[in-house]
Image 1 (cartoon, rainbow, N blue to C red):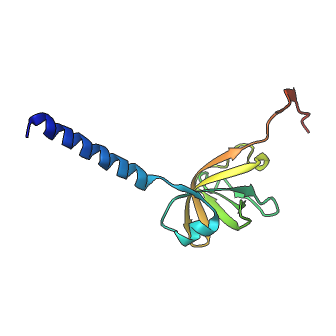
Image 2: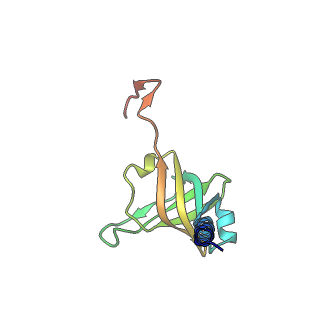
Image 3: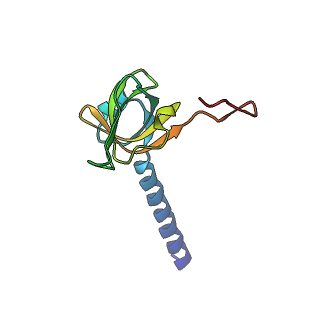
Length: 129
């Protein structure tokens, strides 16, 4: 075999290894039920804040601990433990995407993405208040 063929095979092997590594590290969108059934895997869970229950954030005790309840898009509620500070305008969010894993009966989120209401409606600012 020529050296160029050996180099080509090595490059292809590295590329295949990289593809498998990235596929294994990706998380998928699911609800709390799926996350509970596969507690070892990381999931993206989409839902809404349960405003009927208390959200707890005390930066004097632990600035990187925020707990609240969320209802996923399938109607299942779970307690969420976010290992970051409370996001600004959290209560105003229309939709929440959590990234994390289930641990027991709680979803432990490492990151959070929020969809907040738009300030503009049909190009005109909405009245605040």
